[in-house]
Length: 72
Image (cartoon, rainbow, N blue to C red):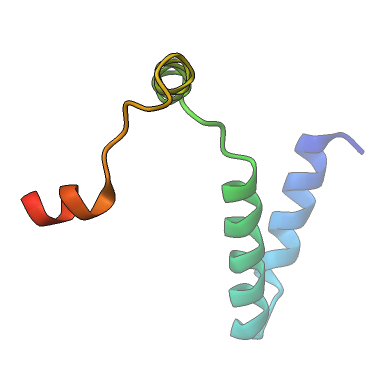
């Protein structure tokens, strides 16, 4: 059975579910799985690479958290 057929079959099965707790569980599982496989946007990867490179080139160029916290 291909993926599209499996999806269709699954949706048909959902219509026969009578317990709300089952739907709640399926929604939680789907949400967790979607979150686990989300890709990090390219812009975020580039920014992280930029910051890591900056840190590696200047490891002593950092701010102390206490100073930052006090100046806010």
